[in-house]
Image 1: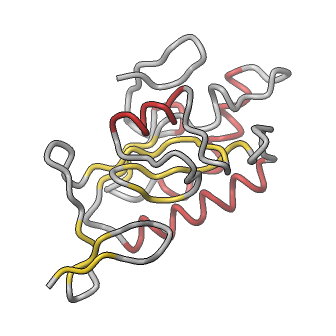
Image 2: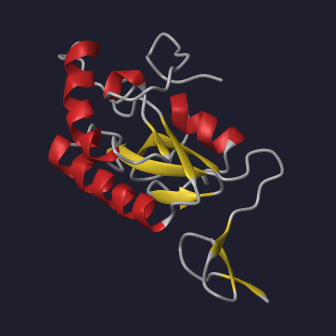
Length: 163
């Protein structure tokens, strides 16, 4: 028997409580992207997540469809301090531990549209890399090369991932 979650996440589970991942083309691959707390997925990797990976407009945190949103901006679209982004990264880490059946393709979160104007891309990458270091040992997490992983990305002029 299958039932639908009444939680904010909209996830579907089987009778044993295990999450069912449904996608005709993506399977168990999750696109992990930088978001804003309001879930306005209008530009960059967030727009890509909404258009291709099931991110839901208005939901700025967590797992939806075949995407996982990690906020790097607040609900007013101001860049979040690193300590707050770190809290969201820890939530993601908890999710990774609970879902070894999923594969997570992580973008260069916080290094494109969420990069402070006073900071170079290299400086921002160095700051963000530190937040993701705990995810390096996980075989099901594919971090971008900039974060110490092996995943290569195609990026636009803002440093946002494109497919």
